[in-house]
Image (cartoon, rainbow, N blue to C red):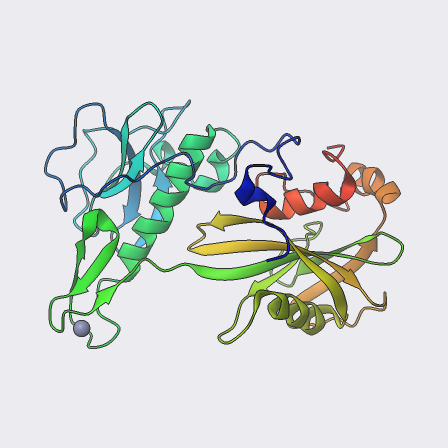
Amino acid sequence: MADEREDTGSDPFSEMPFTHVLDRRALDRPSLTPDDPAGLPAGARTVDVLVDPDARAVLGLGWDGRRLAGDPAHPASGRAPTCYLGRDTAGADWFARPVEGADPADHPGLRSLVDLVDPIEAGAAATAQALLGWHLTHPRCPRCGGPTRSRDAGWLRVCEADGSQHHPRTDPAVIMAVIDEADRILLARNTGWPQGRLSVLAGFVEPGERLVDAVAREVFEEVGLEVGDIVHHADQPWPFPGSLMIGFTARARSAELTLDPREIAEARWVSRAEVPGLLASGAWRYRGRSSISGRLIEHWYGGPLPT
Ligand SMILES: [Zn+2]
């Protein structure tokens, strides 16, 4: 990886006003607790995760209007185990507790909370959503179809029939700010997105692929550009439902776009000078800086966008 600044303590974003990155770095997991703890330890913080008993999906997270909150009155769900998330710097242990039957209004989605909660809570919420989502969608063994049960405080499932072990799944995806020779950034709209929603390109890494090759392939497939100078920039867990977004910058070797109409509805080069006008007119509805796409865009721009 060409750029490991985030891992050496000098985060390239540290001087920028990005406060929440949905990662678990503020939670230490010194040891695993007993499986499915009957009683949570004193002082434990719980994230109530409202699950849909039919669709087996995470619907929302416990929220008291100010911070993540667990409510002992919420009925626990039998669809997933209580999972240990880790210990914060104050010594409190965090758990994700699946609940059913609660009011979705009391359990807003992680996307609506990410700009509100503090970094520890953002990391706990992201981990809770990804981990519980994985439990809900993996009740059976992919080898034999037999039932699996949770182990290691929610960080492993084991097949009761053949003993095979299954770990929480994370799907790597690359996301890249493509810049042309005139220092413009490429913004595109996916076919499924509403008018005005523009962002950088992204795509899943395929088997047998290096990350840089995934960047080059996705850019060429989606907009017909060849790119070079592919540099790792930062990455971010993205639990919708279980991705790791690995961010890059790349330099386009030409500016002519050939869109794949199955994936890309529109794409355009944008200069820094055009940004205020696009935002003011509503032609670009920027989604904010809590996602790595926003971090990449604002890194190119040189600071927060004039929203
Ligand atoms: Zn099995």
